[in-house]
View: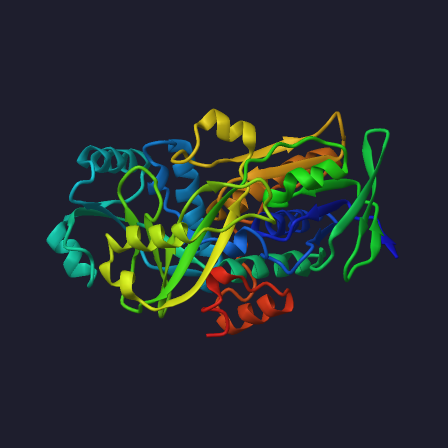
Length: 405
């Protein structure tokens, strides 16, 4: 069996599903494929923070502004995929007060709403907060369910004409005269696709997929651990207000909190070592903000791999700098291939919009993006969202405790 879609989108995480949805809403015949279930990679293995932009305010104003805008958009279109929590950046005794001041000023200049409170007020608002908190800053962070978000995004793509094929790994590509002529799919699909254009949205695997078309794409993946422990008394996201480091975020769920994270380079995004010290350090550092997590019952531990683009990371200087996305048009080497790498879960819709703009330009399609204005299907119905997650085999560890509850 073979098909000839206008666009083949490889990678069923948030960005790939977002590209397929955006293209479908513009009337482009799109097919979305992933080798596993949807959100099986980076998206489903995140800590689930919906950034307000505050984390990057002082280091990357443009990136922070993007986060703020997309935060507001997802609150409007994603319904029960998002949990309204707010976020609290806390300065502990010994933390540099100048860093707190710089972040506060930067947030205000960007337009990120902030409210500064002293340690007593912060402890009164957040039971169990460390007594070492000297002051804190409220920001509009939130928590997102990656599994629900990806499934709803893919379902909207399908409702608008796209084909969605989980468990359909790309096995090979045929390139002739500078164009991808055919893509062989295995798994449940077992078919040949003859797309007009191909989008590589495979996260840390983007280099491998590009290589199938004879294109060199240098990635610098890093692993990060997330530790979920039993704790049902936290309402806001907690962020340590210091230069980004291990164990500086606590993300609330219903009966658990997710502690994160580390940043360790890996050579292979699929086969990499995990280390106990990452778990131990993450718990210990997060306990400086919320002491009870040090002795809380562990629920599950997982690692995610960040899809970082090597030249961009080298230019930015590594950890602590906002990780923007990079859209790579591989023409003229391969005329009908683009890769989208980097970025954050919060900005997946914007990444998809930029990619769809490029694809439509190459296809000669004159249609504008509407994904910021169209509400995701079943957004107000958690049970229906979770049914979509199961249909697409999309449950990831980031929100395994939420799906079906």
